[in-house]
Length: 464
Image (cartoon, rainbow, N blue to C red):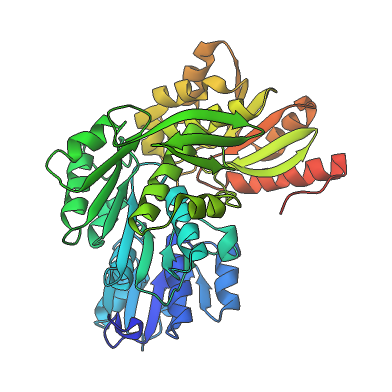
């Protein structure tokens, strides 16, 4: 096995441009724990960058050539950083080696027994489930996921001492091509990231390339309910299909929801979950089959899932006293629909969704699908699009989604001013209502504000 201290050659001093993202911060945590000297920069400071500062990382706000120490051995940068970035330009001038985050991740995990979880949706939760099962069963894995996990003390990564690793395999910017899995999981394949990919065929070919890079004798665990997944896997061997349909190798049956919990059968084995929704049932079966490959029993799997409460911002319960408030990362129509259907199974009250569209291109490409995805919502509030890495596209706004939703004859509003929106929510909320703040941008900050307002008003405690 490769010494973890030499995974980047002779590099000892490493700078991360875009260090504040969940994926980059996980790499930074790993590097610090392995005694590399780490610096980094990001446009915005956050709890993640604060946590890194507490670990001894020097953090700079904003991107500038002055942030990059002259004696840096290696620069790692996120895909969201543009090539004309001052720090990248300085590194080129000083002949400092530059690699993307995806290559850095591959350097860390490819020499281990790697379980790589891919798919348009469900990657983070499925990876987290597998990670928890392996940790609870003393496999001591190295872990990289795209969310904060309570069983990792709010971190998104873990440095294990064993040969095992779990990594979220992200298709954005074709990042997962850098990973060489022993067990590859595919949760689903749908159109997304159409600023990167031409169309669904381009996406499917990208998944084929990821799977072609797997190690010899690798196993593929895939959702066989998804026709795109089945088409991609036509020429691959060692495939295990799971899903609700009888054509799969492992079939989910006898689903029972009670008090927000789910129980179901898979090929004669009973599985229990504390996270709701058919999408999480699918995620858990993928995790169950990965654990099965490592000879972990169904009893031990259930024991681990007994206190799995999900990933931060994945339909995360933030407040419950008369009203219920969730914070949810869903930002694609399929994810939005799955979250709302799960909420409807758990609650009978009026659902009020506050949605922040993520990316102009995604809004442009899927506004019709978004309008349909909110069908379980009784009242929809839309905020301004969160641009992330993009610039504004003329004619593309949240109104596109709103106009589609209003065809359902339900109530929907676009309110750009957040103070006005919070005031409106406070005036209409009633006991029994369920509020969901959804999106991949900074809508979570608005959720936290409304939780504080509700806690003060209702004199209640907020689940930590």
